[in-house]
Image (cartoon, rainbow, N blue to C red):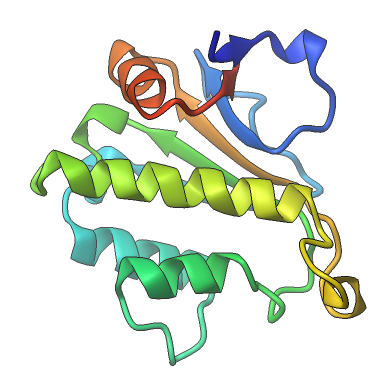
Length: 155
């Protein structure tokens, strides 16, 4: 089983599926929004996420650098982060399907790492446990992709 009702889970990082965008964002979080219509390729995705999360100039516009940046975020004043994705089916639609899978896996890994701080000795000296939630418009495409990758999600 890869999904749980949000009423059964409190304060968990990871993927949440929603039917309507209203009421999704948390005013206590930095909220980054992606509309799949505007992020059909990696360049648009990397540019959009770098702009909204205010990545430093040393971001290299690749998946390794993306994961590194999302696991840091120390330049932001908040410790709680939300990503909202609508029109998921169009997200990275101009790329090979594996690219979207890599992106989902990175988001899942980052959420888990923020959930379990400290992940190693000494990490809590500079990084604190934080909310990192990914809200995705509930469609058959996202459910299929998350199930295929074995990624848990809440609704």
